[in-house]
Amino acid sequence: MPNPSARKALNLRWLEIFQLCARNGSLRQTADATGLSVSTVSHHLRSLEHHLGVALFNHTRRPMVLTPKGHVFLRDIDIALRAIRKAKAEASAGNLTEASHLRLGTIEDLESDVIPDLAVHLSQRMPDCDFLYHTATSREIIEMLRDRELDLGIATAPPDRLRDLQDRPLLRDPFVIVLPAGVEPSVSEVLKDGFSLPFLQFSSDLIIARQIEAQLRRVGFTLPHKFECGSNQTLMAMVAAGAGWTITTPLLFSRAKRFQPQLLMQPFPGKRFARTLSLITTPDCSRSMLDIVNGRIRRALETQVIRPLVATAPWLENQFKLVDAVGEDQS
Image (tube, rainbow, N blue to C red; front, side):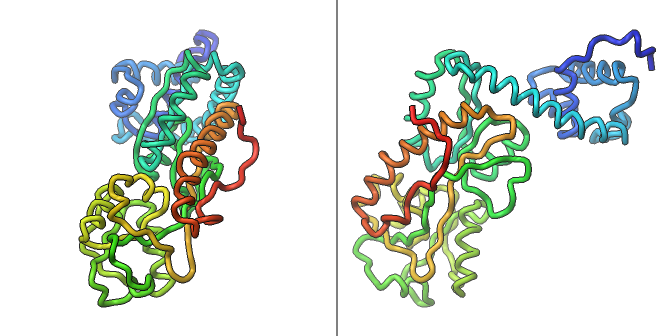
């Protein structure tokens, strides 16, 4: 390696490329993620190694493997880049009119009412900001946050720990039973063998499906199912057509407005349970940006979703509700 005195100044871009390559184990994936060519990514890595005077990767291995010194360097760089990103975010969001970018991921549950309201509000508060809105499953949003492809995400909080991510609870969304209108057995009969309609369920790879399955096991129910689907709207359409019944939540029920005249929503029998929707962020996310998004989301949920639904189903009072949070911006 060359004499350290001949090195160029350390380049922040080299560090970001190194971090991505260490996570991806691939020059091609890093190039795709950054929009650079493979040769440019390779050049950045070589420049960093040249500057440090050490080999960070074993370049003969595929996927790419860090050397022992590379592992140590990655650990320290993760901490340093997190601090730099947080400082940049706070600086740019100190005056929100000058904020330059925001990458927000949401589950589709909020697309019809809450997210459009948020988008309009943010575009007015931050006129020069470049926005990226991404809709995905909760699991995908959490992974994108871990990979630093998003700044904030609104998703179902998983039962396991979020590790390096931070979450701020937003909404308690209890599980309910939805039947075709006109089918009115006692709700407890629905969970018994021999009920005339089949159970229609969410796709098993979704967090919501795993939560429902875990609760059914806890209360001792095993339900054969006929239909599995990742789309809430499709499930509601099937129930409205009389093809079966399902377990869902008031938030999801509220999205199925066109089918509601053909649906009957009832409390889950016995011990009730709920999912929690949270605002999940990377540690380097701007606090001022988080407060703005959190405050607007909570107001939209209260006025556009919770109040109208509780007015038609008063038994949801104190069950379908915002989770107390501190620090949200009220402007």
